Length: 152
Image 1 (tube, rainbow, N blue to C red):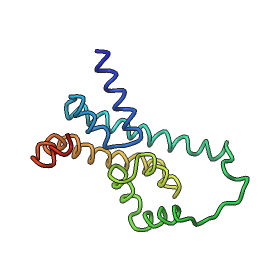
Image 2: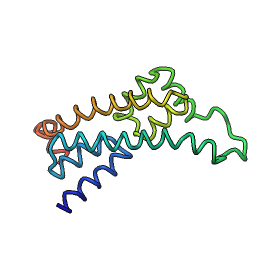
Image 3: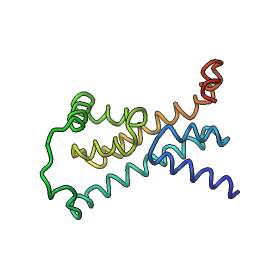
Image 4: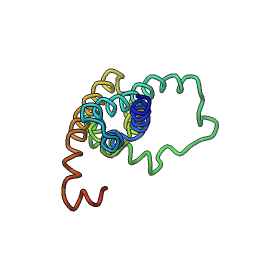
């Protein structure tokens, strides 16, 4: 029982930072697809809630980086603005599990002052959709002869 609990906690902690870690590590640990889905979505949504709710607190209580003047448009900020203009809220939420991390996607949405309720809803729907796709298909992906041999 302790071994199972430690597996779940480890996978949960990994999904706080990288979404795909849930299904991949869950399969390696021998978890069912439903268990992988629950752990993966829980990890991502914990990150989304934490960053969204604590982001306001950090902005008001910590004066991070305000002592020295920074460049407004760096290559990194230009890429973020390009992603936002091109895809908007729906696109950022949909790309978060695939390309962005839960941390990165949530920070982008908070930086553009999206309402908290919308962040929670869109990120949850995105996590559920991609979680179902990854959790239920990862076993079949690894059964593809050449691809499965490369990934094992």
